[in-house]
Image (cartoon, rainbow, N blue to C red):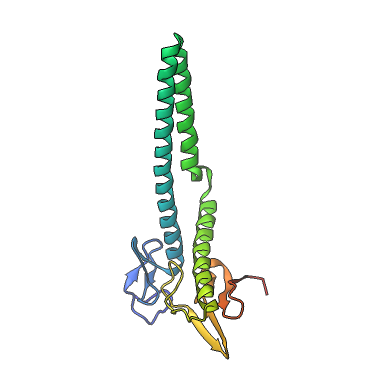
Length: 201
């Protein structure tokens, strides 16, 4: 069977997410599998979100452990000073429960979001990561260096487009449509990342 984008090219892989048949040029190879260009952006964003969530959970466990240790120490002190230790213990228990509830809500903020909101957030994260790559390219251009065409955005295996017009060097994203943009580039003249959306001039 032929590639979904290049019918004359033999398919060498299948997108892990949408099952589209892909040739070698269209296949995006990620740690989690092989994807088409559209699905690879979502997969990269998912991987970033999972990594971020794991880091948040580790920090929250440390916070809970520290809070619990402080509460236990305070409880012991109050028990030695007062015969009303049982009331202190009950209050401490409620405090611990409130901490766990609060940490749970902080750790899993996405539970109350729709699939559309999650996809939109992941797309924004992916586009922000790409913008940071182009900011780095702009810094290189400002220092008189010519960036390598392989300095590409996460999830994009196609090299950036580098054009020279006189003394001006322009580095463009090969497929800004994956972010819903018409153009994404930086030049040696301004070093500022330009992102032109659909419907904009």
